[in-house]
Amino acid sequence: MKKNKKINIVTLGCSKNVVDSEKLLRQLHAGGYDVIYDSDDVSAGTVIINTCGFINDAKEESIDTILRFVKAQEAGNIDNLYVMGCLSERYMEALKHEIPEVRRYFGVNNMSEILNELGVNLRNDLLTDRTITGPGHYAYLKISEGCDRTCAFCAIPVIQGKYISRPIEELVKEASQLADKGVKELILIAQDLSYYGLDLYRKQSLPELVTELLKIESLEWIRLHYLYPANFPMELIPLISKSPRICRYIDIPIQHITDNMLGLMRRSHNRLETEAVLNKLRNEIPGAVIRTTLIAGHPGETEQDFLELKNFISEFRFDRLGVFAYSHEEDTHSYNEYKDEIPESLKESRVSELMKMQQNISAELNESQVGNVLKVIIDRKEGEYFVGRTEYDSPEVDQEVLIAVEHDLKPGSFYNILITQSTDFDLYGVPE
Image (cartoon, rainbow, N blue to C red; front, side):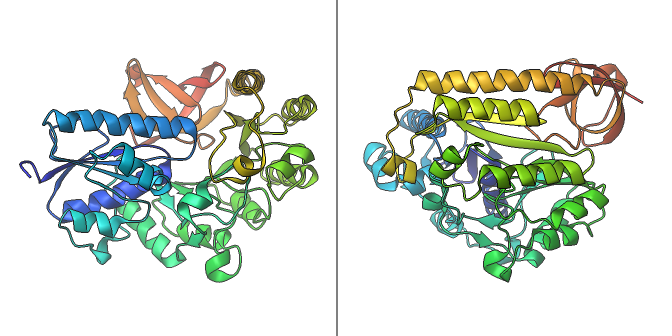
């Protein structure tokens, strides 16, 4: 290789992929490589693309990115192109046939094979260490791999396999190393946090894990992502209520609300159970912000189902909400058992209608914050503003707090911000 000591890692998809790339980065650094991250830079001898293969839009982005670097390779700008991650795990043989220009494809959890290909020995002593690619004051902690749920629309169990919890002591070690690097906000991620520990400890152990993480005193915020509603670990509720360092931010994807749709989606919770969990969270964690995600246009969704979903959103008033149009994914129960009969235009119309409702709810909730003082972490400086977040907002998916640059704040630091103005999805303020 003419440029063999420089590698560009391009990461697509979710925060779980970011963690995988960060661990690979650390190993490659230890192996003597100069590594750049998530860049269009074609000066590197080798490019590794960490792909997403979850839904159609993500698959298209991954394919487009691969083809862009294939062109760079054909132009002689790079020497070797590798592809890893969910897309290549799911479509390995098809990709080899359709895009043979890629030197080698790797699936998920194949770090040692990738390192061997590049002439680097896996360092077991670095398995909990990472090269942080984000701002540095927040980082993700992936507490498990795979998923044991059987949701009809989801291909993750096919791609990632069975749920495998990581031991508490290993996670605490990784979190401590992240804290030593300056991380102040730790974001726990998994396909399903609620399930954590069942395979390893024979009981739901997320509360025990969080309790151990709270002993790392330099972590000011611990945030929990993707808590499945069925068998919700109720011991979390008093833990969140009594600890100011656990963000009062409950990310609980319900996907729908009618018994008909929850049954078709194979969600293992019905409407009554869903409402019971949501109401308990709202009643027993004062000031908690509840975020959810919904799917519009899943096969079998009738106008009555959609009307009931709209009524529920109007009544419950989620603080944060995301809506996705149903994607008909191969190797899923929905793909095998149902026809994708709802037109794309109707799916998108339903998504727009739900998001318009949420826009109005969000505008009202944000207006009620004007005059309040909120603790804010500053993520970055952008144009005329410092951009920050409250404990009620996760990076890249939720709203932000904007503070004029004249106040000279420091990214990565916390400030008490007086909220002076609001819009539908953002807040404006000044340091108190």
